[in-house]
Amino acid sequence: MTLLRGLTLLCGVGALVLIIVFIALRVYLASQSKKIVKKVRREKQVDRELSHNTQTNIPSESRSETLSTLPAPVRRDPEVLRREQEVLRDSLHIFRQLKACKDKETRSRLCLEASDLFDDLPNRVGRSAAATTSGQIVFCNGLMECNGLDELQDCKDGAAEKLIERVLPIIFAF
Image (cartoon, rainbow, N blue to C red):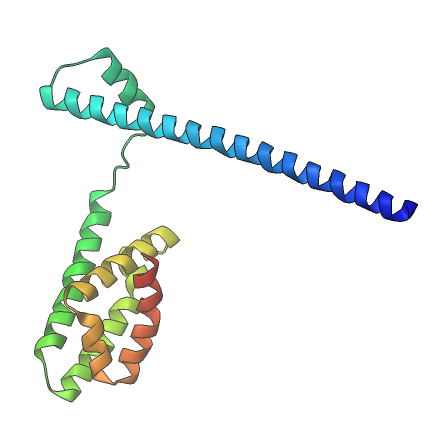
């Protein structure tokens, strides 16, 4: 009987501890959500002030303080932008030709061209991971703009299938 009372007492104390922990967590989460709401409201207020000040072109002390806390926009090298535009232009050219062409041999050649362009991206845009990834995204943008994924699937070509396997993770990642 004493063992049963001890076990009952232990279960009761355990239940009370769990209730106290539950209440403490609820209070903590409520305070965190209030902090997040305040932060979002503060950011919206800063955005409103910033847009109002830029629309009215009135220099403001709060505007300069706000601007000084914002990170500076990243300036991209014009040469990098030019190379990315070339990749976009070339990918659009290939996929537009692929869309217009119905000849199986020509479509196969265009699939190889697209695959070669994709393989050559590090040489065209830069070998760094950031430059290559940016070039791949630009290539995929050109592909998607021309509905090139459907065209590649319709090709039923080995090069087309390999290219699809390589671009799908990039497309779905962004």
